Image 1 (cartoon, rainbow, N blue to C red):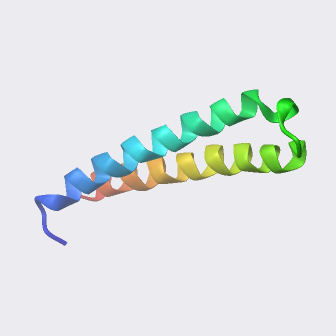
Image 2 (cartoon, rainbow, N blue to C red):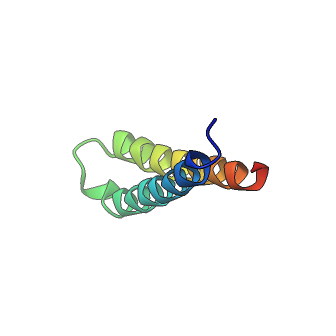
Image 3 (cartoon, rainbow, N blue to C red):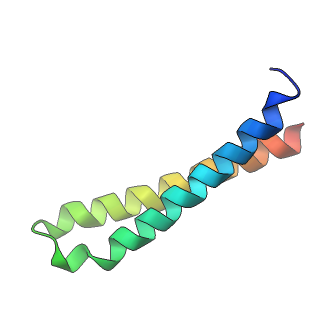
Length: 65
């Protein structure tokens, strides 16, 4: 991979991971108001877990440079 693009992609992974994480937290506030609370809880957990996964991938990319 190009050495110039790798830090930029790592920064993008971290930003998008944090965005997904906070959107997952926001979805968690409205779980009880949804028509299907179990599906809303599932969306909340997926957002939080996958957001943290993207942040960790971005951090691994930064460390491995």
